[in-house]
Image (cartoon, rainbow, N blue to C red; front, side, top):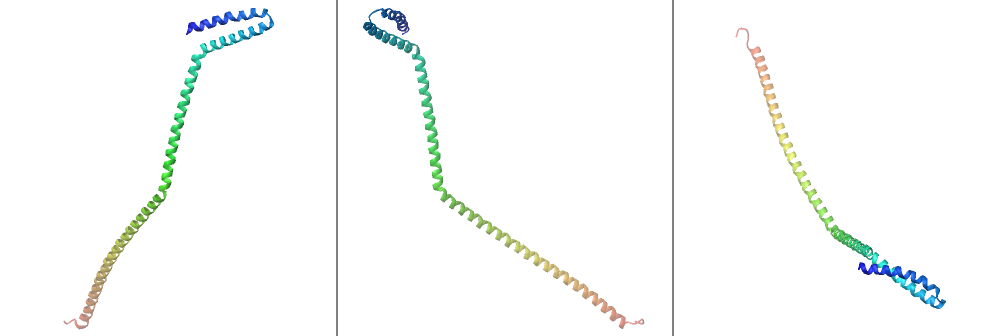
Length: 172
């Protein structure tokens, strides 16, 4: 391939001076000859450009194609992810009413359980208060009985002492 390219370059170099010699002929021939030489020069120029620029152009377009394919793949992945998220959110929205009802049901159950626990605690506290109150009343009754017995004993001793003083004389 390189030999063919060198041959084209050599032909171009030889044809350019040949077109300069053709200007000395008649005008009509000159016009047709000039047109032919211009066409040959254009073909040679394009051939040289294609020869030298083929690899860089091919590389550029291959890289560009890979970049575009990569970008398309990334865009497709982003689109898939967005569609999945949209479907997930739509599903959540569809389940939202049932989730709200479930949350309300759970809150109601917890409130009912807490109410029962509070009532049980209150009943236990009331029973404890009654028991403590009954114990306090019993203790107060015992204390009052003991105080009454003591007072009755003191009064009995005092009365007995009075009776003894009144009835017993020094002679007895």
